[in-house]
Image 1 (cartoon, rainbow, N blue to C red):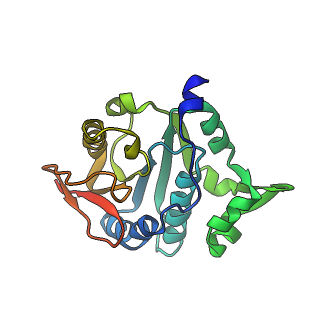
Image 2: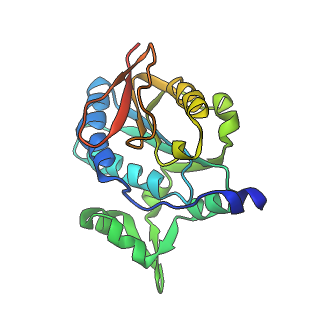
Amino acid sequence: MLVDQLTVHETCFFRHASSMQLVKEVVLPDVMRRGKTFHAWSVACSTGEEAYSLAMLIDDFCLGLDGRVQFSVTGTDISLPSLRQAKAGRYPERRLKDIPDLFREGYCTPVTQGQFGVADHLRKRVCFAQLNLRDVARAPMGGMDIVFCQNLLIYYDRDRRLEIVNSLSEFLSPGGVLVLGPGELLNWQHPHMEKVRYQDTLAYRRTD
């Protein structure tokens, strides 16, 4: 309970539009040229809006492709109450304003007065699990095509930020992309990562 009270839960659907455009215009086309699977990880996902936003983008992109595509989105957070809401996939109606009209129609359904839910067919593509960033190096995942870690590093000093991003980079498949919040980490260098040039974003691609 104490951890939950001390944790920042601020989030929304399609937060930071430029990073989402990077996924749509650069990451997805690049990965799909190399295969028919896509795995995404939303680190510190809070109540799940970021994870579901990624799932909407990926599913919509896959609908335009020939052949069946396998994809999954994993959201992790330290807060169990936040994860319970994320798994339920229900949100106040006012959050709909953050979702593009096309996605609202295809992925959102009214559930009660003043609430909507993420459509079941999309919700089944997203899983949520508890993870403390102190233990991120031992997370049971790998082969990620994209790792989203935005608006989190600002709460740590530079040394801890470096530890976190160095660990997260190890979960990427070759060509996978780590997306951070703009300005959250300056002048990071890693022997197997290169900066992705895209307006108003901070992202790095695994090169080995």
